[in-house]
Image (tube, rainbow, N blue to C red; front, side, top):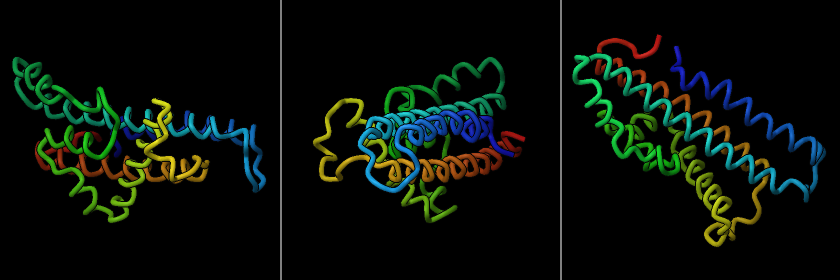
Length: 190
């Protein structure tokens, strides 16, 4: 069974991202060729994808904390919950590999080692996540100097990033389920 966070990623987040895809088709059509009126939609798609993935990661981290905290005496739960969430990077920065690894690392796991071990394609997916966040920052801060050599942002690129985020979300969910089951002796979500 998947976590609630992963289920929301596959339903609610996917539906929101599909709306941008539909808008892209409505404006640019489906035929091959250059689309001059769609660059802002590509930007919007990238920003929405980055925000939805960050929400998934933050929600999954919270769900993992909740599972662990439920195993300890109630008088200690607030203290432990606060410590696991203290200075959580996913609350204030991008969901990039470093921040994700750091936040989940507080739960006693070398996350990326486990994710890469699960599927070697996750190395490439993590690189796509870095590129997504580079573009997200360029768009939001209107500073394209760091990515200017890559040219414009294309729909196919954002769709590739989305596919990578899907793969990473599934891997994060599975790795954390296995890790928490090992720590607690019981699965975190049924």
